[in-house]
Image 1 (cartoon, one colour):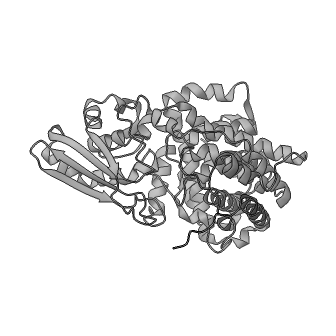
Image 2: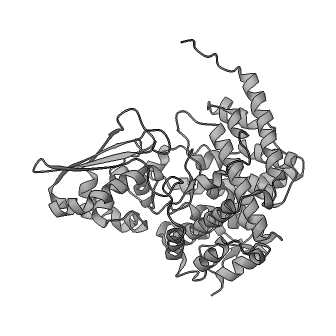
Image 3: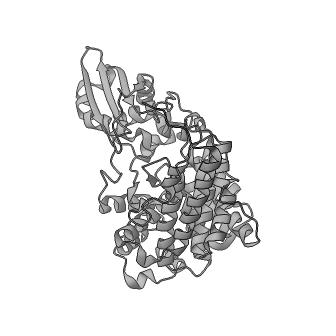
Length: 467
């Protein structure tokens, strides 16, 4: 079989330039009437799911300590800092704090087709900009759907092999620039100038820092939000990147791959926002299939007794294999530890925030079980998407018996979505004590009532944050 010749770099760069320009021309031209109602409703869920994650972070001790450092003297301003009722700041400071809080619990919405937390990259900057300006809810939903489409296409087009950088560092600044440019309705050339400039300002974001529990990881999205917002302001002064900046950064500098067709193929026919996933487990999505498998056999395991477990074997996909820290020293490391996720699920019977809280790190039964977990690659071939992140868990006992369960695709994605009411229940659990009206507001807005769509976003914020 003949070997295909690689595309010359100059030709690949030109193809990327051409398709990037087409993508931003399309993005700037989309109107709310061009977006199907189901995609708009999904944008409402993305919006409030991530706000709920921002609110939920407020109880985390490490976040409580860093919040004053994030705000500095900037308290009081035009945009809400959602983790605390009544707290406001200038736009960029609010975006920073909201981005940091949104990813703290690992409960923010994500995109399944490639590593990309599109909502996290768009919303902190977008919501601050919208609240400070004259944007309506309709304007916000347009920016969410179109921005989601744009940043996920960039993420898919510029794949990384091997995956050594987390997507927060790779795409947060670009997503923020896109979101702000869309809500300001900038022309496509200016939007592209801002986003391409942001691409040159990304952070390295080493992926191993997640399993190591390096808490600076929780800052990457916040730095990206501020950087993207600044890039839009700079573009207004004529300072920007070029259409080739994306190729230069992601391919030439970072040695990644490029598929220009993914930037524009099928634009407007399908909507990436419909392919996102909702997280009920407060940890890396790569671990979710293993948790589901554990929960499937947990009752039988308990019947035999946790004390009788001799070993726990997990076969899983390549993205999860590096997450093998059996001794996580903080909550971030726990959220990226297969050993902790499996052990905590066995002990607690769930994978929510409580399974990854600081108190669970020192729980004796969890600690013992963590040390019994081993990992190995899923037997080839790994199934095709959406079953390409599978897990098989085998629990061995002292009496030589074993229990086993498998999960090919964790719940929450487009193939196994949670019903809207389950998503709203999650939002309510995270926000009821702080904003009792938030989940109800989200429920009402899912129906896209015309009067509310035309309402200013800042008024909607005032409504659901009212005591």
